[in-house]
Image (cartoon, rainbow, N blue to C red):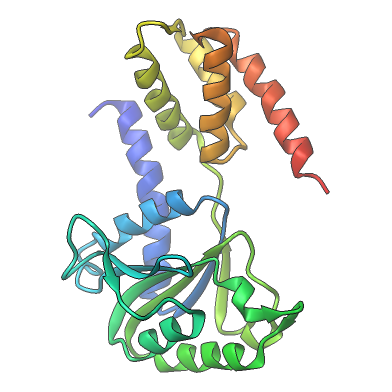
Length: 246
């Protein structure tokens, strides 16, 4: 394994270790604030594959797909659907009866509010869920852009922000895009080490999806990557940052 691969693996392992620590510390309800759902689920698969969590199973819920088993005992190459758990209350009722499991609930936060105010019944159910699973090997993770500020849940839900990709993970993303371009006979990759380093620094501060989109746009414009790609990325990044501002 090269030193670059070592750094990339270390960055991924650091996030997996952090998630593992919260789970082992019995934080029953965790809210992870991020737009990068796929990236977070990738890290959660790493957690679920750890020996201490493997038997629990990794489940993912969304209103459109219901509850699905992604990894662990009983899983297959395709997610296994747990029937009848499509709505926001039924999935909580299912978890209340579970003895173990890692449950990721995607975009659950809007169901906790009604006309901008907390829904008392569902908030109460979450408090009861937190108490019920405290002595079990169950962790519930609410995944979405933002978890609402609900005083009744302040002591029950640990709110975390998923950090943006650091240098090692950004280098991995760039390597993946370079490999894709090098397989295209109509594209050219002309990056020496300083140019590659500059490009990585230019990408920092973006999400994975933003990085992939910006690199794709630059590749189309330049028909590949060159020493002039980093300035183009910086221009695109400034536009994205300006668009985020209210």
